[in-house]
Length: 124
Image 1 (cartoon, rainbow, N blue to C red):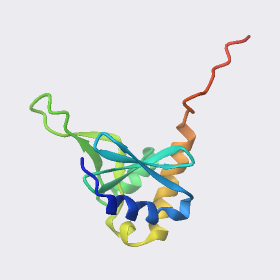
Image 2 (image 1 turned 30 degrees about the horizontal axis):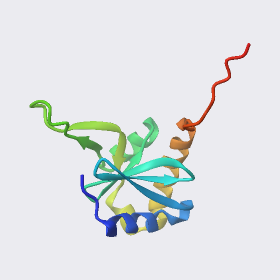
Image 3 (image 1 turned 135 degrees about the vertical axis):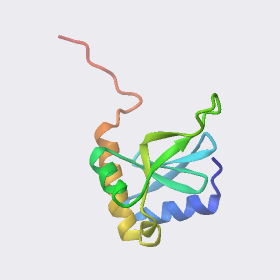
Image 4 (image 1 turned 180 degrees about the horizontal axis):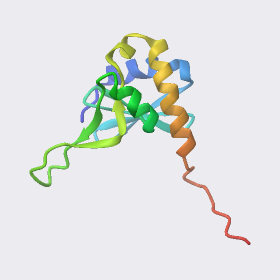
């Protein structure tokens, strides 16, 4: 899951219309964050965005696919990690299109994001 620094920089620049984008190393790849919320990941110099069901349907129509993970524990080979799908190739050449897809992913990620330091209120 190696990620080149050039590709990370390219993707951060591509999504700059969304706000300040940070790439954080994780498991040999990188998570992409905007305002502290992870909305995309990079693995093997390929970009994947966080999806909900509607975004998955739209991406499937454009022949995009899920992030595949090979845990190396059995003979099943790589398995889909359905929470992240690739964007259309055309979006990598068009910052406006990339930001449209990225905004949808970010909106979904923000809707399900739970802050790490959230304290639950157990008072009745």
